[in-house]
Length: 447
Image 1 (cartoon, one colour):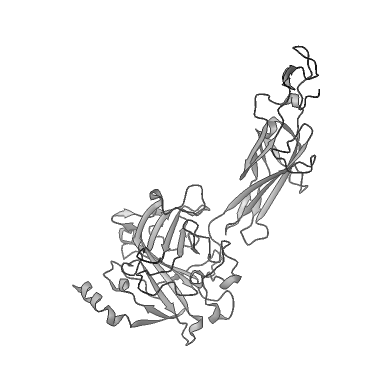
Image 2 (tube, helix red, strand yellow; image 1 turned 120 degrees about the vertical axis):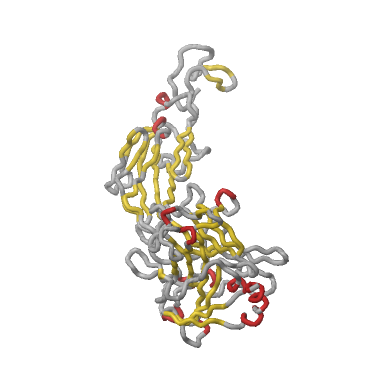
């Protein structure tokens, strides 16, 4: 009855707001029907929120507008997906206000996590909600929190708030917890049931686990307003744990969580992500090969022949937010060595010489900086020379195949060994017909 009464009274109290004073300014809590429904938990007070800090102990204050260097390559716009720090109020970019905060609530039962909640909120440059009669609560973007629960350099879970406002009668909006796709550092697939751990509605009529608070900064200047978008995550739902036991009672989440926004359904870092060191390393490996003997890149139309020199370049770039210490470049070149001999293990002359063991070439460990470090890319080169054709394995495919991030193939001509069909007749490779003595295996048959 109480819930029904409050719903009937919403038309009266929706025009009211609760003004709370805090260090981050005056919070104008913009009430929604879902926020006054019969929820099983209470949102944190202003004093309970904890500012997320980097590993040096400083609050994370993200850049705003298009000058933001912490982004996934897509433009950081519209402003409701621009992670903010009160730039207009602070007079500097980034501003001086916390961009990301959290609160762990044990509900007074230390050691029993069955009723525990973790709350997160991200400061935004504009209101993420939509107006009108569609029934949607949020615009069609993603606001995400990434989790690292095992102290490695990858995210294991993504908490995703997806607005998905659409036209007509089609409407959906969700808050979901998903596992990261195997083999990925942070991407996920919400359409794969195997990745879905928890999923609840986030629409105007059913929005128990999210809310928005307006930030006025104790002034009358509306142009500098920011907004908190807040989400609540239970550690257990319907009696089932949603996160690993390592998260139980973990009230200090430094280095364990990371805030981002996206327009992508699978890449949470596609738009904006918060400044400050995070936990993930994103090493991208690429490889190229050139044939200076033939003045070009080997292709199916430009095959290598005995005596040709091939120069391989291995490159690793860290697009993550955490430096990778002691990274070892190594590559399985066993297929290359079936047709070629190593001629230079330090072709680029950087004094780091590679070594080959059981067909694997490797170099000494090197440090890879984070994405914004000029030292976030390292590379090494080595060269090989194609063996004489009589040293090739004639039962093989005559392709030097190598995989280091991408696949690189160098094609060889199939050699003539013994009697071959040349000029539509069976001849010796030296031009004499019939079976008899012949020249040794070679890359060409000269008649």
